[in-house]
Length: 125
Image (cartoon, rainbow, N blue to C red; front, side, top):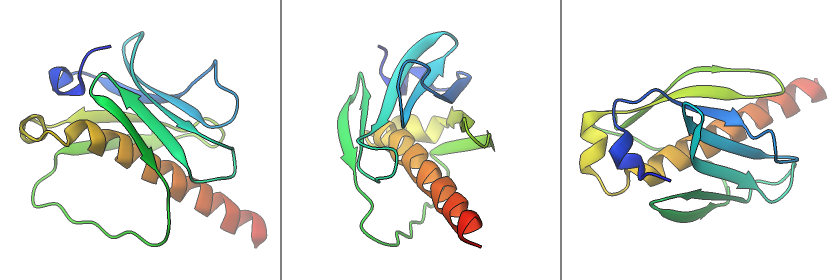
């Protein structure tokens, strides 16, 4: 796997992992998997993210509000009901931060959690 900082300007895409049951996702550069995000269970919020840059775990414990002075990572064309996917752009500013790989993983984790929350609310109405 390549480090995410080496992939600036590439057409990266988060997709549901075909080989993973439940909550597995892969960040792909074409056909190559460059990062993964796996949930411990389909209904929980605990997830493990891995890339050549390292391994991180995420666990939602409440409402998280963040701010950025300038975009480091952009998620575009977020779509799909059962198979969520998104285009990912690491901006040139993002390559200068050691935390850029972590932001790519965290951004996708939060996107999945928001999608799951919206689905839960819609199902309960």
